[in-house]
Amino acid sequence: MRRYPLFLVILFMFSFSYGIAQEYETVSESRKTNLISVLNYRYKGGFYTLEKHFNNSVSFPEVAKYNCRVGICIASLYIDCEGVLQKVSLKNPLRLGIDEEISNFFNSTAGNWNTCDDERYMKFDIPIQFTLSGTETNATDALLIHVGEGVPGQPCNSDEYYLTKVEKLLKKKNGKKAMQYINVLIRRDPYNNKYYEMKKEATGYMENN
Image (tube, rainbow, N blue to C red; front, side, top):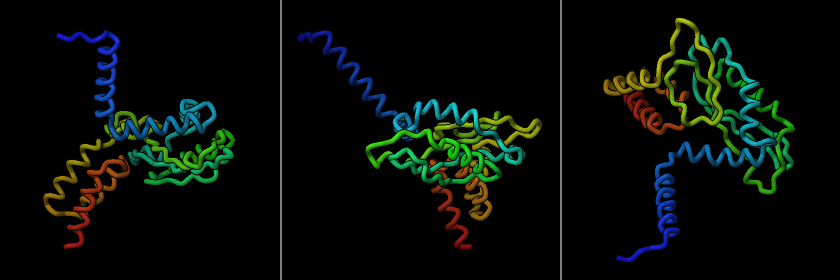
C-alpha cells in the first residue's frame, strides 16, 4: 500500500473541507462577504466602524413600531473615487419614517469614505433590516440590522403567518387578497425569489378575473 507524506494528506483534507464550505455557502453569505470586503476598502475604519456608527445613529420610529413595520430596505450608494458621497437611493422602501432614518444615517457618513483606484468600487447596495424584538422574520439577508423594542401587548406576525395566508389564498385563486400579504413578505425579504413567483401567480389570477 502506497503511503503519502503527512503534509500532502493535511493539504488534501484542508482543500476538501474548504471545497465543501464553498459549495454550501449561501447566496446571502457570499453577497455579504463580498460587500464587507468592499466596505473595508471604502469606509474609513472598515465595515465594523460603519456598523458601530449605524447602531449609534438610527432609531425605530414609533409609528413604524405600532404598525409592525419590519423589513429590509436596500440602500444603493454612489461614492466617487475621490471619497465623495454623491447619491443615496433606496430600493424596497419601508416608509413610516424608517426610510428617513436610513437616508439620514448615510448622509451623516459624508467625509468618512476612502478614495479608490477603480470605478467598480463606486456603486454598491447595502441591505438594511429594521425589525422588532420577538418578531419571527428572516435575518440572514441583511448586512446592517436594527432591532427595536416591540409595543407591549402588541406582538407582530411572523413571516410564516403571512406565507400560510398567501398559500391558502392562491389555492382559492384569490389573487387580489393574496397580493396584500405577498407585498408584506417582499418588504420583509426582497431577496426571496419564492415571493416573486407567488406574486406572478397572484397577478395571473387577478388578470383572469
